[in-house]
Every structure is written in structure tokens, then in C-alpha cells.
Amino acid sequence: MAEIRPFCAVRPRADWAEKIAALPYDVYNRKEAREETAKHPESFLCIDRAETQFPEDTDPYAPEVYQKAHDLLYDWIAEGRFEKEKKPCYYVYEETREGRTQTGIVACASVDDYENNVIKKHEETRAEKEEDRIRHVDACNAQTGPIFLAYRKNETICELVARAKEKTPVYDFISREGIGQRVFLIDDDKEIAQLKEAFAEVPAVYIADGHHRAASAGESQ
Image 1 (tube, rainbow, N blue to C red):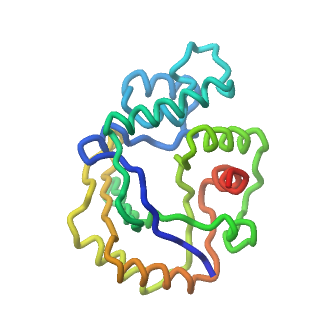
Image 2 (cartoon, rainbow, N blue to C red):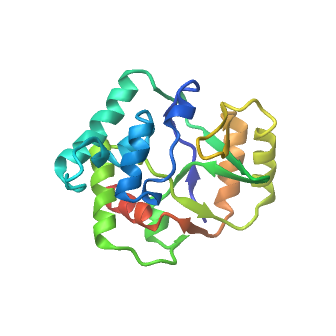
């Protein structure tokens, strides 16, 4: 059975979310990442790819690069660009592009489930990519990159997600890439308990994307 927990997110303040939102760190090559952060210096990519804050010939795996990621993250928190949730919550995340909508739940998965194969893998990982993410997580003391998990349809989960989407979203904007972004909060104690119990009935979840992030989370616990 899968353990999928609510958590106290450190997330962008509503008036900063559109500026901070960024695509995953690994969809850019070095040149593209540098160009993107130069155009958008408030993008979270500056933290996820902190080598962009140094001269072009800088080793992206140098200790100072990971330290820069840490410093930027905590500077931005201190400046009030981020806020910490007051209680553990689940988040319903909706993306819309070209008429197609995809909805998921942002939550914490269990490292034990990863080790015990409740979280199913289907890709081999490369040691150097794992090491990079381990060092990034350790330096920032934060898991900055989500892991995309899939699970078999559960009617209770579907109902709770649909109910959440009837609320006013905490974020509602179109990103630079033209993707509609909406996030809804599940903070009602009864609904939180129902969602946690529903996930406990799910026998397995599957990594759709993020094998290196998942492996590094296990090593960084």
C-alpha cells in the first residue's frame, strides 16, 4: 500500500508564482539554461541550475555551484518571495495546454516505499546524475524537483480532487511557455484524512518521470 502524505510546502507567494515558475531543470542544455536565466532572473531555474550564475567555463558540479543554489533559495525565502504552509496539506495541480488538461496531486511519497518497491521503477539511472541531485538536495536541505508518479484510478481520490477544483485556486496564471497553471489547496482535516486513507488502498505507484530525483531522495534521507 502506498504512503502518500500531506506536507507543509514552502511555496511561492501568489504574486511571485508566475515569475518563479520554471520548467524542470533537465529539459535545458547548458546554453539554453544560461539564456533562460539571463532573460528571467527570478525563475526557479536559477536555483535548479545554479551554474548559470557563474562564468560559462564554471564546472557545474563545483562545490560553489551547490552553495549558490542554497544561498539563492534562502535569500529568496528571506525576501518574502516564498511562504511556508501553516499546516500539512495536499495540493491539486492542474496544467492546461492546447485544450488538454492534466491534473495531479502534489504530496510526499515514502522513501521506504521506494526501497520496498511499492514505488515501481522502469529505468536505469546514471551515477553521475544521481550524485548531482544528491548534492543539490543536501546543499539546499530541500527537495526542489518533483517526481512524477502514476497510480491506478481510485474513485475516492477522483472525487476529492474534483471537490478541490471547485474552490478558488491559490495560483491561476499562464506560464511563459503558454501552459495554464492552477493550484488548489486541500487543507480540510476530514478531506486530508480521506485522501490519505484512499492512497493507502493503492497497491503500487509508478515513476512516470524523475528516476534520478527519486534515487537521490532515497540517498539523501
